[in-house]
Each structure stands twice: as structure tokens, then as C-alpha cells.
Image 1: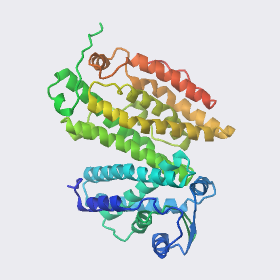
Image 2 (image 1 turned 30 degrees about the vertical axis):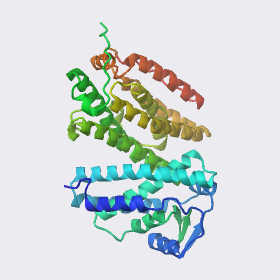
Image 3 (image 1 turned 180 degrees about the horizontal axis):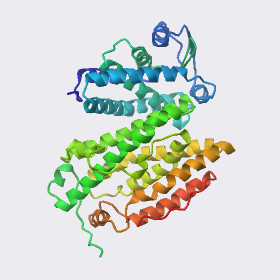
Image 4 (image 1 turned 135 degrees about the horizontal axis):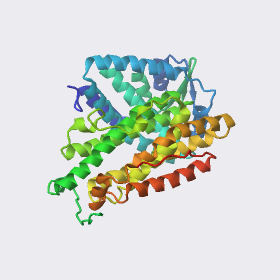
Length: 177
Length: 238
């Protein structure tokens, strides 16, 4: 029975608590950021976003591509199906829901702190940031519970854990806040 | 005939064990109802809406809303578990009939915006009625939930404001309001509800179903009017 004490989920809880959520927004890119960007989506180019208003403009633009979102959703669904084959459905669902709830509360506070520190963020954008970060936690958990420890969701989570926020992918370019 | 109210206050789950059976049953009914309906809402509306959201901004905002709705279910379920309610009774399909609005799968982004605008206002009223509940763990949970419920209703307002900027968007939103509005006043239960009578007797809840429904219709009409929307006529629940 998969429960709240499942080792994969416990391990992620520890990683979530240790992560530097939103601490490096707008900072200069590092070699580590570029390596994680490549591992995440094959990006050979990383576009740095400097401010909350700039991030909001990118995320709200009807011209921002969504094919990367659809690819991630397809992967998540495939991994979820594999996870469901390995674990009882109710226990899996409960573990994922409890993990995401806990992580959501934590990252929401971190996003609010970052927004207050940097200034210029619309109040709703704090919720958007928390949604993005909590989704990354959920995707990571689904992948690991499916037995896949080398999915793109690992490197996506590492970008968040390093204080970044990957905003989207356009071709071979990752837009990174 | 109106039952006399009591002065019982229950400050902890431990104290609840010594409360009269009618009080314990009433509190359990409310916790089960919230746990089940929060989960239905998240599964039927919020999670599917992520796919319909038009931009990454809207998608992640919807993600956050969905996670918070799931989180409400988790918190009500945790309280129920502390009270000794079996987990199965707090999950869909365990005999608790869902609200009729949950029988219609979400089809468009405009439907979701209409639901956030109006159905989440109904949820706010339900939670407001628990803010002075004599069972303090439930009162505290309501107070913790309220800011998130207000954010969800604001989400509905913000995206309504976006949609009504174009005649096409406004027409689609009005159509969604027309489709979902008739189900919403029923959220508040029957006029002669025995459960509501017991809730008020013990000051678990404060208002009659009809008082809440009347307030909801008034507030919903006001918020709809802000965006140039109208609410269709609805025959009131018996």
C-alpha cells in the first residue's frame, strides 16, 4: 500500500523543503542553469528574464507557444499510467494530493517573499508562480513513482530548486526567470 | 417550530467526544459534505480547466486553483479523520450524492470562468456561515479556507473582465452563465431542511438555507452586472 510514508514521496518532501524556491529570479545565468536547461528540454539557448512584469508579459502573451506544455502533459499522463500500474490507485492519488498540497503552501510563501523582495509583481502572479512550482513537484513525483528517475521533470525540478523559474520553451530556446 | 438554540462550544476534537450525539452527527455531516464537494469540484472542473486555459499564465493560475481545491478536500478529510470518520465516507462514490452541477463535465474555458465567478461565490457564502461555528476546529478550518475561496472568486472576476472585452467573448461567457446558473441556487438546500434546523440549533451554522440563497442571488446578480452579464430566471427550490 502506497501511503504518506512512501520512500519516494518522503524523499521528494525533503528535496522540496531544501530547495531555494525563487531565490535566483533575474540573477545572471550559471553553467549549472544552462546544463539543467539542456537536460530539461534540449535548449541550446537560454533567454534570461529579469523582472516580474517581463515574466508576466511573456506568460500572458497569446503568441507564447504551448507545444512544450502539451508535450509535458503527454509525458505526465504516460508516467501516471505507469505509476498507477505499480501502485494502488487510492494510495497513489492520496500521496500525490497530500504532497502537492504541502508543497503548494510552501512555494506560495516563497513566491510571495521573492515578489516582495524584487517588487513589481501583480498579486495574481504569486499564485501563478506557486502553481508552476507545485506542478513541477507533482510532475517529479509522478515520474519517480512510475520508476523513471531520468525524466525531464528531474531537471525541471532542479531549475526550480536552484531558485529559477522556467517559463516556457520556444524551439531550442528556454525562457528562464 | 423553531428549536431552542444552545450555548455549547466545542474547542477541540477531543472535546467533541463528550458532545451530544446530535451535535457530533451534525458536525460530521458538514465535514463530509465539504470534503466530498471540494474533491468533486477539483476533479470535475478545476483540473480539466487547465487544458482549456489559453496562456501559460492562465494555466498555472488554474493549476494553483485546482491544487487549493484539492487542498481544501485534504484539510476537511484530515479533520474528519481526527473526528473518527472513515476515509471512504469522505470520498466521492461513498453514498454521498454529489451536487447536481458536478454531473456536467466541463467543456470550455468560458464555462470554467463562469463557475469561478458564480459557483465559488456560493462556496464563499457556505464558508462564511462557518466562520462563527461553535465547533472551533471547523471554524478555524473555514477561516483558513476563506482567503483561498476569495482568490478563486477573484479569478472568476479577472477572467470575466478579460472575456467581456470582445462581443464574442462576452457572448460565450453569457452562454456559460445561462447553462450553469440554474444549478447554483440549489447549493443551499431545501427551505424546510431538518439538517439546517439542527445546524442552527447548535450554532454550527448561522443562517437558514433560504436566507443564504437570497443573499447569494443578490450578490451574484451584483457581480454579474459588473461585467454586463445577466442571470436567467430560476425556479426556487421547494
